[in-house]
Length: 245
Image (cartoon, rainbow, N blue to C red; front, side):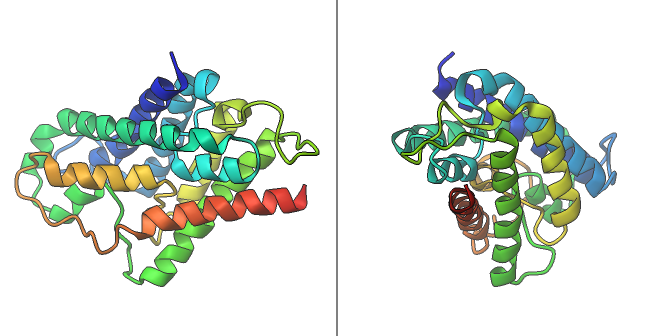
């Protein structure tokens, strides 16, 4: 398996299990209906765990453009590889979204809450305030990438580059799973904690394509927040890590 394929499969599993739990909690007549944010946060952490287990040994299991860019800024990842990794993550995000839809097809058609349907694909803020929604996503993603860098403890050389490939796979899956759970429970309230551009944008596209019965618009006016804020958070985390090293 190549790193490209590993990022596709790992991201597909991440989205399948992550957005899958949101579908289980929010869609009508599911076994997990109305289970709440704690269940969603725990399952998202375990979704990361499963994706990392698969992709970690091959690609470093970034599964997130913000992580890829943050690691490149920190000197732990070759900038030339960044476009390929992000492309693979986008493909994986699309596959994962389709698998969620296939798993919950009948529940999508039975659900009348169109906001709930959208939420199984992408994020929507609890209180619409784009500047502060941006800050929330930036802070949450900063915590994700910054803590990952310190868990990984990469050794910075005199040239500013790390020895070896640094990614989620190098830190072990379990601590990262706990990290994502903590972010969800602590910082997930205002925006739903995208902390990953691919986790939000690609499923948002798939929401507009897939047959879900009656559905609302994709709230595209908000879509720039969970793209740019996580990337900014990853860049700041990588830059601060280098400054403190």
